[in-house]
Image 1 (cartoon, rainbow, N blue to C red):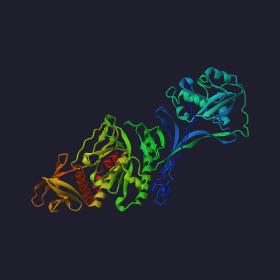
Image 2 (image 1 turned 180 degrees about the horizontal axis):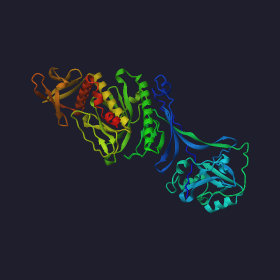
Image 3 (image 1 turned 90 degrees about the horizontal axis):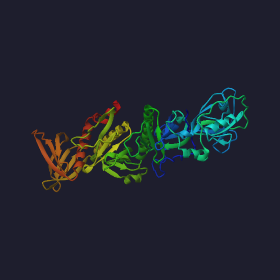
Image 4 (image 1 turned 180 degrees about the vertical axis):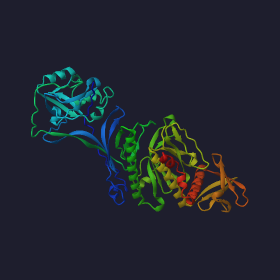
Amino acid sequence: MHVVEISRGRYIYAISSGLNKDCEWLANYRTSFSSLGFHTSTTKTGIALLYDEGSENAYDIQLKLTKEVLTVQKQDVICISGNVHSTNHRAVTLHRQPVGGLGLSIKGGAEHKVPVVISKIFKDQAADQTGMLFIGDALIQVSKLYIYSTHIFVHLLRNAGDEVTITVQYLREAPSFLKLPLGKKKLMSTANFFSFCNISHNELCLLILIYSLQAPSSPSSPIANEPKYEKRWLDTLSVPLSMARISRYKAGTDKLRSNAFEVLALDGVSTGILQFYTAQECADWLRALSTNISDLTLQNMKMANKCCSLSDQIIHMGWVNERLEGTGSSQLYKYKFLALKGPSFYIFSTPPVSTLDWVRAEKIYHLCEVLFKVHKLWLADDCWLQANLYLGIHQDYELEDQRPYCFSVMVGHGKSHYFNVELGSELAAWEKSFQRAIFLDVQRTGSKTYMCSWQGVTLCFTVDFALGFTCFDSKTKNVLWRFKFSQLKGSSDDGKTRVKLLFQNLDTKQIEMKELEFQDLTAVLHCIHSFIAAKVASLDPVFIDSQSIARKYMYSN
């Protein structure tokens, strides 16, 4: 029993134009690489499958990765010399040999809803000597008659004499399909196959097997102007990697694709689902693509920062998936682009490609008033780690989704954003970048003052990087009390507006409680945490690394 496949060769992709032309600081990034020390000579190639989730069809492709572009290549048969008609069909005349007959084998048949495809060509026999037939060629005609039944096809071969003229067309999808056992998968629908052959349903019923026939003959000498063909990998799609994103999940679900992912360019061009034969190959390509995308993002940041003041530099930016609110057990996610720039944390639906885009963010938060938390990461089989990276503040999340590498950013009024990234290295990068951006913002800002009240008196509460905590009357400006960061020994709050701060008096060693009421208590508590963490980091160089949960556990595994 044998199987078949077919390729129409009609898949035409537009080469991506790269980044938006309105981008002021990305438009000329290719010309700036040499000055920034970025080299583009490294190329990675490999074989993968292009998988269609709808039809469940897959066929071999070749990937070519450079620093800037991922190119998808598909196999095709091309004419390299001689006269050739514009049609994709090739008429090939075979001369039977005394031993070996036609010198080819096929797979396929109408009962499998697939065309007949050449699955093997025997070296130095009739089919091989033509130089015009290839594994993966779909058989369309024999002696100008369409193949419409097994018995008639065999009859045609038996009565064709020493010469048999067959019409073929290369099927791109064939190579991977030929490796499958019969009945496992079909390559295309019956209707699409009829369209491929340009014949009606009533005219077509394909055979199962071509077998060798014994007949005396000798191969003829090649004609001088006869066309010559070669099977080659041809570029069919290029995906620019600057601001590109990778998706390992089926759309709208938490289902991780097995050894597969999709690469999407900034302008929406997609590779389709790239499937790999082993988990190791998939992991290697994920790492290589992620590294190149990160490198390009870094170069874009450097160029953008040339136009920004020192206090408004971009620290980090990139794609994430945000879990939508109110989605229940379905846990739907949506792509977001995050950026840490100057004193602010930005959330975009699309990357900012011009200076004007920064004011068009969906959300903008003060960095010193947000709290980053590694929410979940994968350690080993059936082992999840939930880590708390904050002092005295806790919020539970339902862990119903199956996505690893998650983090949350808690903002004012008790609200939070929950994000997922594709790789552990990305989670570690976001953790480190948030810490760095928040510490820089605290050191740059120096102090933060909030209006508060207690027992009907309006007060001002200041968190100062050098002085610690100060509370003074908003009208008279008289200082009511002041404590250093080291004197804060504990706190408690009602989860709404009131907080109790416990300080130790340096002289009496007694604990003094100060109770205050704030309009946005969450923002104040986050600010206190940011200032204390930045203060400790300024005194202890290893503090940041000791607090990096993702890097500590991901890299050790």
